[in-house]
Amino acid sequence: MNYSKIKVQKNISRPDIVFDLVAIPGTSRVLLASSDFNIHDLDISQQKAESKTLSGHASYVTTLALGKDVLASGSYDGKIILWNISNNEKNKVAGCPSEMDQENHSLARW
Image (tube, rainbow, N blue to C red; front, side, top):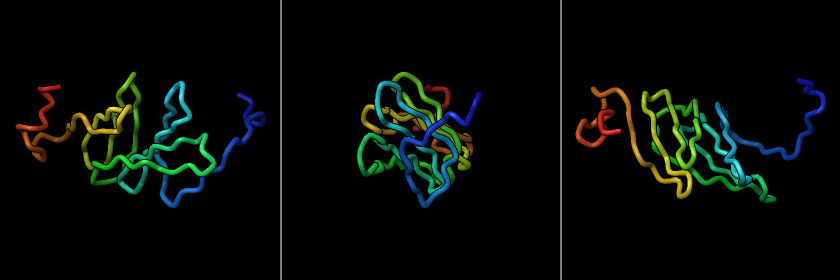
């Protein structure tokens, strides 16, 4: 790939470290995995891209994977959270069974 042909379209400054980024197809939204323990939903078409915050992790969010209507986030806290990207609500949480409430967050129920 010839990287010299890539042009910066927009510069967005952030105080945190961004570990991962996914773009939602057909929209101008991007989701950022952050060192502030959150996921940030930005609409980069806006003049000032305000962040909507998805909270639920207890450590750095290091990875994101996007499905049709679902976002999976992984963190140093050992948890994977599934989010509904149409309303940014948390759907499911999975992690080390010894550290989690077995009744409410069981991998067997996925």
